[in-house]
Image 1 (cartoon, rainbow, N blue to C red):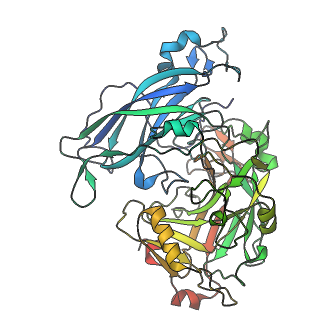
Image 2: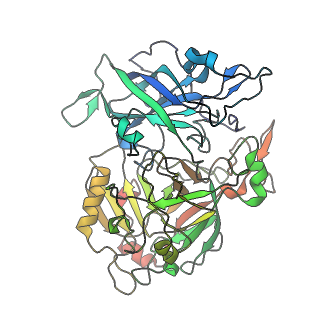
Image 3: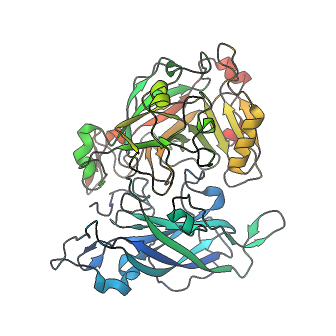
Length: 526
């Protein structure tokens, strides 16, 4: 049982109190937000396993998170966090059935047996302030009390947590369908396609959130353990450099056409003991970490066919976990490695997830993952590692402003042998437009240079990213000379070196090519 994360370095402090009275609908003093605001109130119903108890209290809390429709969390969208959240402490949520819960007489942690019958409890929640827009409300019960929104390594649900949200098709979800989250409009139309908050503010009542789906997976914790590269000569898996003018020799590509990174479940073997203990409590020991793989139903038709295969090969399916490289903010100082994703524009390179190689992926396929909220049927494939091939393409989009076109930038129009890489540009544009709700341009030019995080994402939205706080020392806790410890004035904590890794899009091999085919300004923010 993991306990609450308490990392000894600076963090944004978020209030997670419930039942603090009615919030005002006019919030004039919030940084980056001023004027009238929206407030949403609702009920939460929990139906699931009984909670754990400790020291006379119920462990955990129910979290309700508001997501702007334009900034939904992966894999649904390009968001990097919730617009706002509220929490119902376990003591409050389960107050009406407290007499049915079991507390250890010595106050020790006590969790119910897996065969214990489900319990039902309910509470109320309030989220504010919210700006005008369309929102979805998602949530989960943090059964083991390890949620901390301030850190990327602890801000998503883990195995055993109970997920859900405000869902339109709850009955269908119970039968295995993907959830359709209720969309709640906050504000009044301004005539330009936007929702704005009137001077008196907006209060929306009666949004019901249901939690009832036990998540069977841990987050896909990983580290880059090897790199195979006959293209750019990379040998260090924690610092893979891709030339911005990357060029395939032939198309369709072979395995050796790609820079391929092996992502191994968990952390480096020398770090397992430290990772499993305070302050990290990572799920890497007893049992060992595993990555779960399955075929993605790309078009959502419930079938597996050629439409669910990657564009590089009609024989290779698109697999979970989805692999993504996201451009991160540039460092301010040499010893200040930023780990925040660049928000505007979002720049993303999707990797190609493989079961070791292209041939094995096309012949030894894990089965489909039919239910995004329950991704481990008995036939699920569990692997100690996955291979990610780096694609020479990036998606650049301003997620906040749908009036701006998105840009799909491909480093070369053809492979070196003259074969076109995109066979049908219009079909690709239509597919991107349908996915992101705006028109797209296709540009052949050099990839956006900079540092990119490595990410794996499950269909539940559970994800893992490197670099992260476990491997990066903050300014207030510089790392020791051996690189193994982050030492603050009053305390110290281990540094997991395997969690400090990134992809870098670097200088081109042919500067003249990039001068003639520059990176689109939509990808640079200039």
